[in-house]
Image (spheres, rainbow, N blue to C red):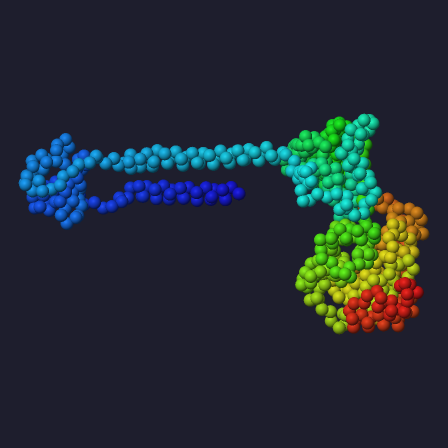
Length: 614
């Protein structure tokens, strides 16, 4: 930055020097060459009848010859022209033939103006400009220094919030969360109603939910509904490498909010500064902790008439400092759940309202195929569908694009360049057919929506299962059936080809992890309803780096035996089913090799079943 400024100044100085030189050359360059003759030559020319007229301007003589040429000469100062010429020997008769006139002496302004401009005014202007530039830079530097401690909050004004005004109508689902926040909106609109009853509105509201569920959107909707200034800032924007900057920014943010009251302060990613204190390497007085301490002090300093509400969002409430969550600071904790099937349908409609849609759009089917998707995921699906339609030069988005967009978001784009050999294609077909068959005949499993051996993302093929209904709790039967389904591809390869490939590595990892959770976390084993293992988190790193074992080596051995038993039993069930229905395995695999993709209706037709169960 400094080098660029020096180069810019150097170029500017060189340009100024060129300009001064050009002005100097222009002022001192003679406009026209004049012929100056000595007085003796003038006398000789007059005596030879070569001179036509003479104009006297002071001591300067402008001589015009008979041949119309012009010349200048000088006379003696203080004497008349006639006497001066006669004294030099001019013939009087010849002198009388010449037209002699006089005019006022010429005042050449450049004789005094040029030195004044070059040596007086111009240097003053140049130095004045440099001083002005230096002062301006110094002032801007000083302003930047003072602005360094100001909060970098993005302010959305109360007058309609510009083009980005968001209300609760723009937020689909989250009914319980919106009901909780309606009271906040009502207080911001009519604070006297609550103050008259001696009620205190919550000073802070913590929005808790996984990434993409709509925490920031909901906070913006509160500000839009209340029509008050909304100051949005990220938790990471408070902390700098300089000590005291974070706390100074907190003070500035709260002071600005109080001046604009009623208003809303929204702190996104609160866990960036709100982590549990006292766990850092450098002791308890690092910059982040000072910033957190200042937030605690500012929230304690709020009066009930202040009219400033603090909204904060995090997806890691477990690592927040307890002082933040006590009553009087963040009084309310609102949990935002992922949208259910009805909410997903409404979210898709909101994100598709500005897109040209075809007549075959079925948002219900799209919502059913997107279990576990957050609001951000669904917005991405709608956008990807529009991109796919535009890429194909279509004038509207059809249901086909939405369904393909779901798979693209889930697994990644189709890898058309990843062409499988004939043998690999056969292995992939039997592998995916094994997943589908085991899932079909195992109890408490999800229906198969699609089977494909077209590579997407890191997967050479995939079997897409979508739950027919939302589930909040799961049984042991459901877990063991899912483990069998995961091992179905592994078993199908073993039965058909007599050996296994690396294609089952991801399935084996997921199955092993699920079996270990059954034993250690869910208490679904012969070890009884006991949770084994205690997580330890190093807060300053922000991730789990170790797990403290709260059980003996003997119990650890029994846990391994239980996991092994669950995996082996799931494998046995999968092999039994595949051997029993080997003809169906062959039929599905061959059809998959031929078509590469099988949808739900065609799969059920091949299986000869209805409602995806037999």
